Length: 196
Ligand code: HEC
Image (cartoon, rainbow, N blue to C red):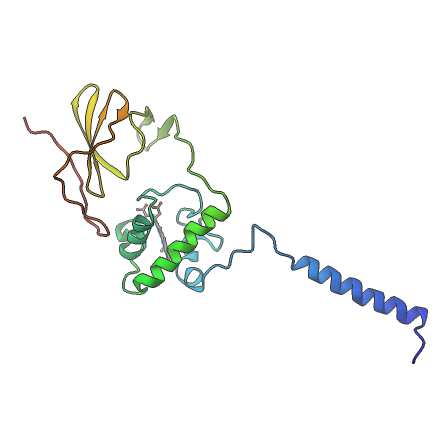
């Protein structure tokens, strides 16, 4: 057997140290381990960012879903898009199963990173006004339109098809029966108005 000279010993140690350092640098980083699906990188990242945190379009990881946060709402957003606002419709490019996989990934990422819904702001600045926010009822699912019956009572439509009543600052648990439900489509229960 060849004797290990101090020089060789040093080289061996350096190789071991190099190997150790390399394995440390590839150790999983909880922020970076997510395997972003190839379809997201190819089709979505240019607008929503490689890390989903937004680029020229909004972050998909900020806990805020302006078109509804249920899996079916997000699938609808991806399938039909909002072409007039710059979000293409992907229904002709991706199958429902592929869209479902993508949406599952978005929701899993939110869960993995502990993303929660942002708190309700007290004011919202629009182009022309600063709007004061007052919570008059919570727990609505994708509310779309409101019609005041009196100062303290209002009817609110939920896009998924329910007509709800908000009274004295709280949402009544029962919805008004006899309204058709339109899930998974671009339609839904939209405007409400009172007839005198
Ligand atoms: C060309 C830019 C562009 C590309 C590419 C794009 N999006 Fe979007 N996306 C947008 C814009 C802009 C909006 C906001 C539309 C609005 O506010 O009306 C949006 C909105 C969304 C929403 C709704 C978010 C919410 O708050 O409810 C989802 C979900 C979404 N995109 C997912 C995707 C996925 C998944 C892909 C890839 C398959 C993708 N987008 C590709 C521009 C893009």
